[in-house]
Length: 118
Image 1 (cartoon, rainbow, N blue to C red):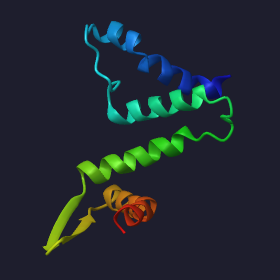
Image 2: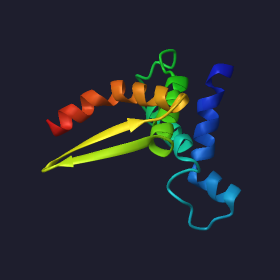
Image 3: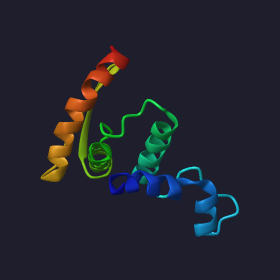
Image 4: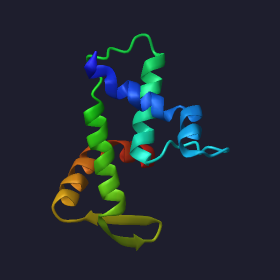
């Protein structure tokens, strides 16, 4: 079906033999091209191996949007760092799409950071 064509294409391009052939590299890199592409490819491969995967519930676009937010925060946001003894406070900010990405990433990742750092 057409709606499954993107994961199939992603899996095809992530195949090391295909990547080696396309790029002409005898020692192919582990990451298949751009990092978001590689992350999507890896997730699709994991889901493809799981017979319980319900492709009707898989939302590759949501993953793509999240990876875009991560890219914006990592590469485009500004960060002010304040160190006080053994603690550090990071204030992350930006304008437009970057500011929106910072807000979404804060909501998405704050619980994980809290759990890992206490």
